[in-house]
Image 1 (cartoon, helix red, strand yellow):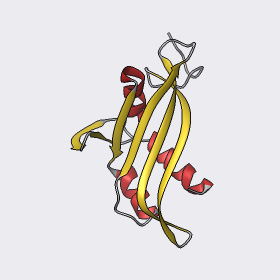
Image 2 (cartoon, one colour; image 1 turned 45 degrees about the horizontal axis):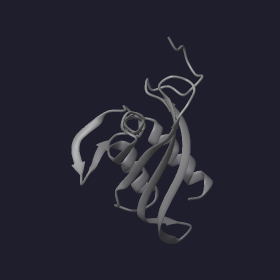
Image 3 (spheres, helix red, strand yellow; image 1 turned 90 degrees about the vertical axis):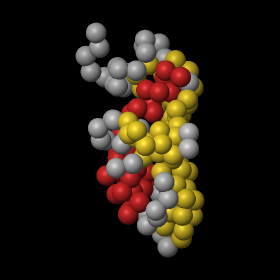
Length: 126
């Protein structure tokens, strides 16, 4: 995805309520944003989900596809700060229309995140 598309997706994925939905797609849990998946990967090593709700609707409209937005998160290693890990996030969506071409897209990035929902070194930690 181009840098604008990446920024749109990343901002929307981290925003939202953070809640889990009871709906499931295969072995993927439905989430409003990726925060529960980040926490799940810290707790269990990996987490798999599909984005639902307003963020998913916006992204599907933006990229002119009805395909689900799948997200896989895996813990790469714990960080020195207790409860924090370096995580690898992979997002996928099929049939994305960008610059007049329809293609399957995948975005892989890394983020440091803590079990309590903060980023390492941010906020008041007790």
